[in-house]
Image 1 (tube, helix red, strand yellow):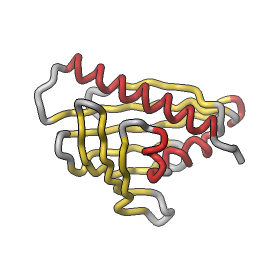
Image 2 (cartoon, rainbow, N blue to C red; image 1 turned 90 degrees about the vertical axis):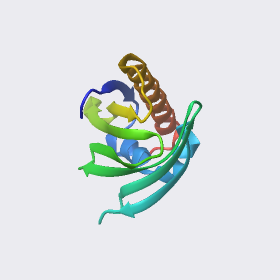
Image 3 (tube, rainbow, N blue to C red; image 1 turned 45 degrees about the vertical axis):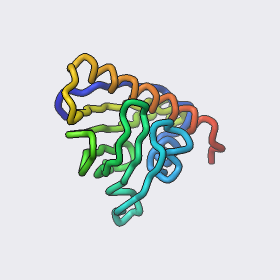
Image 4 (cartoon, rainbow, N blue to C red; image 1 turned 180 degrees about the horizontal axis):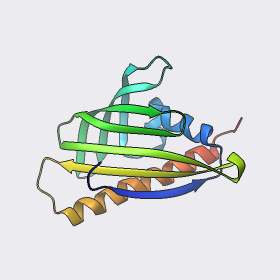
Length: 149
């Protein structure tokens, strides 16, 4: 990943519970805010999404794009842009680190976005930071409010 922005958050749940929320693309519109619609286009032999179409509405940025997902065991998932109307590139990763014997999880989200319209690097990184912080806060709220088990 080229120049990217990253941030971390601790979630009061086991890594498997966090990853199950991350992998449940159909429910993204319920907790992400910007994602209005999702469609899993392809899955791997374990049933995990390999290609997902997402319709975004983040105010100034509205887009319909397809991402390709790569799963690294049960502790990391990365994605890259396949096609988009507004984006030239979108590379991201959720990395999960178990804490407190696996009772909590540190989630690190890395993101690099390149839009088709010219944008100053400083503004682009600020936008990446907002996207990351909103996503992590939404993920934490979603995982911690879900019944565990």
